[in-house]
Image (tube, rainbow, N blue to C red; front, top):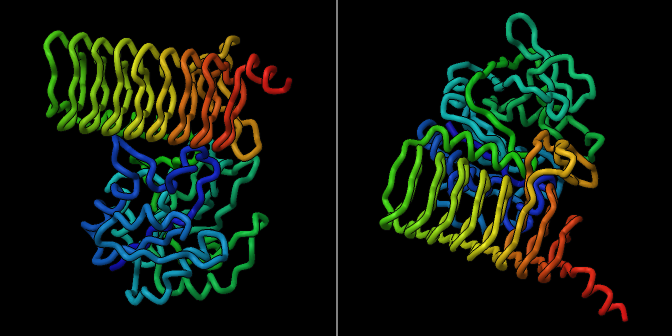
Length: 406
């Protein structure tokens, strides 16, 4: 049996994280999501095909033992699957969306059933997804995409097992209202031949920036404590903490788990790492910093005197001294974020900044809750960042704006 991972989406809702990496490469405990998929699938299939966008091909070249297939120009999940038709000669094959998080039991559940099968999960906000309607025999009746008043909390989980027939039905569908050829439209044509498996294990769609914080929390809870790095004297470690090889925890640091410290990272001296913080590899968290419930990606430097709370900080970011991410609105209402030109509630009372890769901030920069800073942006000293910053933008404080205009 073969497996197909659909990984060609641009991930616009995840920006600015996806300014510099494909959506399936978001890190879960410092490991790209797609590598977790591949590790699971290798236990059950002989070959793995990954459908990619040519724009991001360089990222996928590092993955060994899979076949990369570039998606044709047509957009959508059905078009992505159509790209691999000539490589599929098995009676049945698996299909996985590259941006969903799941456990191994999800794959087992689908493989136990013969014929066309799809996984479904129950969620609290089904209107964001394809809602699944099924009959009393767990056969699919219909998938209804993103309706305002969903008839059910059961949704399409993006994990399937298909027979060869699916390709002939892909050929029959028309573009959706979004101008895409969508796989659920083809599945609806064979609904009476599709068995729906209800899954109660861990499943998550990483579709919005703050989802990455929650996804890392889920997997951090599953890990056991391990300390492979160097811990100097006068370090306080409380609760479950993972410290990978080559990491150094300097004197005076207080780590309150659960927390994760990646390979070759240096923490402290006198840093405070609070619960549910995930720090990637080769990160430098220096003196008198406080990091709380945040994801800090590889090669980032937060040298001294900063606070990062409930935030996502992407790779190779450098914070100047005194950079603060505010994570609570003054009125204590839920933090809202701009997602594809729409103001969306995060559902969180505490949410800090989403900072893209290679960003630089000067000293004494303050970033308000829910602000997104695009990759390669520069934030000048003393700025209060009260709006989203575009990719590559130079953001000036008021005194510099006035001087530049005169």
